[in-house]
Image 1: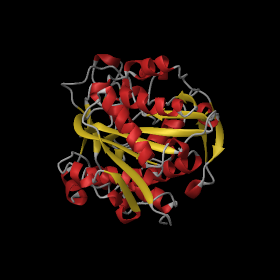
Image 2 (image 1 turned 45 degrees about the vertical axis):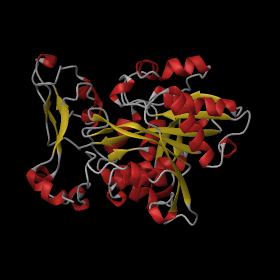
Image 3 (image 1 turned 135 degrees about the vertical axis):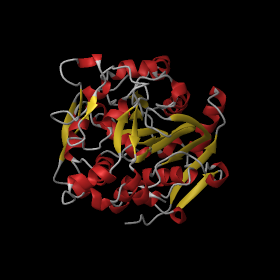
Image 4 (image 1 turned 90 degrees about the horizontal axis):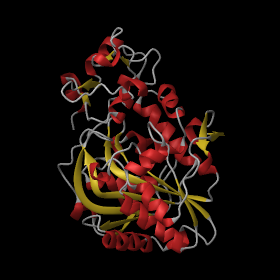
Length: 387
């Protein structure tokens, strides 16, 4: 279902993270969408929800850069909003991750408290999964409005992670792993992302793409300079422009297709009004990103397991990089684990995959701090997934 109205996306060049450059670019982007009055009134409680996947320094491009977070926060404070911030990382305490990522020092300097993302309350999903429930973080429920601040990155399961995928972090704690079990393939998981977005839609989406991540994302990839910030009140439109910037067909991103079918936003460029710069002038043709998702028929339970093993990508450990930290083992949502220590040796040896149990959620690859897990695409899969 296409939205009946045009969506606006502001595409604002910003060559680096110099504070003055970022502040001007953020101000320009918000003005291009109609100004701060569109997104906050004096006294309103506004939650900033940056992507805080893991505790890595800003130069690794894993999380939203602190200069972007600070510039957005100041705009809302200047509008008279009561600003908080928070996220539910893949693993670890938000306080530590925000500190290493450089976010909490900026928040502390601005007097912005950390919202409660440890506890949550059960809410019924909307759209295609209206019979299901999730827990939303208290910090989300306590706010009058939310701002999603995402990072332009690749993702092992969903291809890319941007405005829509960032909202998965509104679900606190271990429930995210449980949801990977409940929605084990990319198409069902994408329906979940659309349902979460319907349940807790931000008023504004900002994407940090000054330095993006390509390749083995969302944590183990390589920084790639893109030199742009994106702004929109439509998550689908913003992620569609993200695709345009990296020459990726948005119809090949399952969560965009799922959100579009759920009636969220505009997927076609002819329904998106661009303010600022032409995306094509800033595009990167050789951005390293999965170009197609797995064929839908391979996710069917009717396909024999041996066939799926031949044609389904799988996570693999690079022994030269692995430090036996165990983060991947702890992150595996399957019982018994699909990735575990062999025998009784524990962390003295490399973890071992049991692919017959693996649901291909790639949580292990997502969380690895050493970039030691990558996704191997079998030769037959390369034929099925080719452009």
